[in-house]
Amino acid sequence: MPKKTTQTTLLREKGEFTKFQILLEIMRNQPHIKQKDISDKLGITIQAISKYFKKLTKEGLLEAGSERADYRLTPKAIIKLHEDLRGLESYVTEVKHDLKVEHAWPAIATQPVKAGQEVGLIMKEGVMYTTTPDNSSAEAKGIALVDAKEGEDLGLKELHGKVKMKQGKILIVKLPSIRKGGSRAVDIAKLKAYYNEFKPDRIGVMGAVGRAVLNKLELKADIEFGISRSAAIAASRGLNVFVLVVGRMVNRMLQEIDQINMKTNAEIIYEVKDAQKIMS
Image (cartoon, rainbow, N blue to C red; front, top):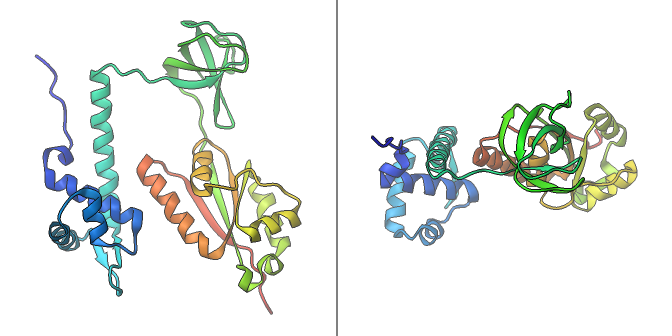
């Protein structure tokens, strides 16, 4: 008798999936949400979208601000999105297993490897490397899918064991805008103390003020574009990331990291500190 596939409520009930889509669109664009934009994106009439907004508000998933088209997700909505995403991921995983879709895990070869050969695996700075299977430092083992020379990338299957992956952190340092003095209004001694205490693996910077501050610290940035996503990925791979951001961009970055956490079911830890001089 064939196994019965477990379907998430989202796939059983069309209305639930539409709610899920609307909540996602609100999350991506909050707080200024135009119902017409969501109507165009989802191919649903604006009248139907309006009814869903009222229903979501009544269910405690959506709250309206004081201004027109000002909507935000409630904490209850964030929890619901997490649960719905987990349900979808579980369903997709089950389908992939039934279809025998094989996942290839990427690694870098530290010695010549032949396809079908068993290799040991270790993790360094968020990247997986092969080693000999009898190496005492190997944390897991896998089977190579292709031949690879030393230094080349390769795919692996049938991983067993557990590669140790520590959780990295993100320290976001809030800098004053140019109107508030820019780099001249930064407490460099305080900033150095933050840096030395945090001991970052990577440095990210956003904007001219941050670059000027790095020049004063005689440091160079590893990440200058796509800061939120790059920092989140680095932290998820065990690296500590030190980011310099002008004050008005901090909230935007926090929102983006929260969205990445929700979309990927990650738990990236971040902290915000202020480096502006205290005027006496």
